[in-house]
Amino acid sequence: MCTQIDEQRNLKYASMSRRVKAIILVLIIAVSLFALTCVIIPMRSFHIPLVNYCPFWNMDKKENMTLEQVNLDLDLVKSLGFRGIKMWNIEEYESKEWTDEIFEALEQRELKAILPFRWRG
Image 1 (cartoon, rainbow, N blue to C red):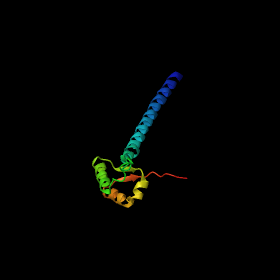
Image 2 (image 1 turned 90 degrees about the vertical axis):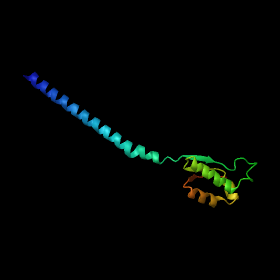
Image 3 (image 1 turned 120 degrees about the vertical axis):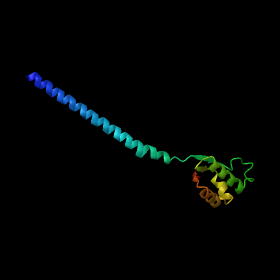
Image 4 (image 1 turned 60 degrees about the vertical axis):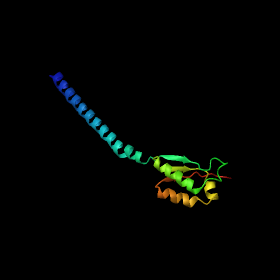
């Protein structure tokens, strides 16, 4: 008689542990789906494909570069599907006094810009 009661208790605990395992599995799936829909997928929308843009890279031709050519380059960047540029040689933009015009052109095309800062001690 004692063994029957022990067997019944063991079956009861075994079935309860199955329920607990099932509940834990459902919770894990729910948390995973939550993380996927609320965290991982929205993070993809923060991805901004940028292109490295150096119009003054070739030092021999830097005097020949015009603002119209830079605007044509920005049109090309936009048409290729990039959402912004990483600007280099900021000093050249400033020396030609193009900085405001470049940022207005970026705003018109709904492009973003990343600017590097250099420290010269």
